[in-house]
Amino acid sequence: MDYLLELINSYLPGENYTRLVFPTLIGVATLAFCLSLMMIVNGLATPFRQRVRALVAHPEARVDQRKDSGRGWSAALDPLSRRLLPGKDWERSPVRAKLVHAGFRSDSAGQTFFAIKVLLALSSFTLALFVTRLFPQLEARQILLYAAGAAFVGLILPDMVLERLVRRRKRAIRNGFPDALDLLVVCVEAGLGLSAALQRVARELDVSHPELSEELNLVNVEIRAGVNRMDALRGLANRTGLDEIRGLVALLDQSVRFGSSIADTLRVYSEEFRDKRMQLAEEMAAKIGTKMIFPLTFFLWPGFFLIAVGPAVLKVLEALSR
Image (cartoon, rainbow, N blue to C red; front, side):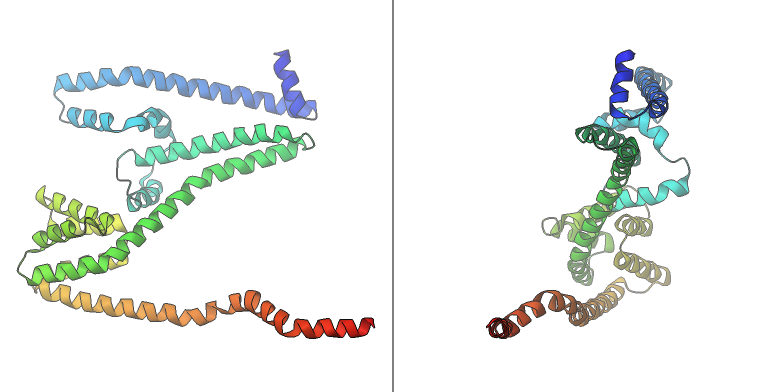
């Protein structure tokens, strides 16, 4: 105990800080012990509950066993992440939607995400405390400030990575959507049904656009499993989060309700989407002139004045020096 107090005093300038830090360390150690104990108890009790459900012939027994066997290392974080996951649906839904947009559709994705956030924040806090040991001139208040900043960075870093993954996947799906739409129009006009056309388009895009092909294959699997076709297409729009696909699904839903031709609907939407892409390209081209002002001002103009006015300035300085 004396050694621990001396070690803490070596980090902190006064005894007042030690009186605050020492109970904090005791609380953290107690919390870690309780979490470890809960993980051990949960690990011992889970096989028993699975066996009881199997003996009672509960219909969810085999499904739970398959889920537990496929979760991998995330099952070790389950006791911690279950207590860190928000309990209300309106708090959980934005993160869940982002995870689905990024391609993480498993049931344990949200739990694993929140567990990673908390563990990364704690690890960053601890690492900052050890790094600040290398700078003895820092005060205790500065050390705590840096550690809190590191914990905050570790807490928001998973959100930043998730946002980047979402943007990258949306960009990949958006780039493949025009090709998929043109192929879908050709397949439907050739006489294939919508489900068969979606299956053929998914097979054709397997190499060039694997993300969109995976989503279309999932739609085909849901339709074959008995899900309504429009519900499966709405699920596609919700999983991708793209307005283009959401507009296509709404147009197909309207076509099915009013009994109009799906081929005509797809052809009209393809033409409108092509015009929309052209307008977007023209808009981006019109913005280039404004965006080029800053590079011209900060990079090209200084070099131009240096070359054009520089020799004259040197001659004037030479003449003044004489």
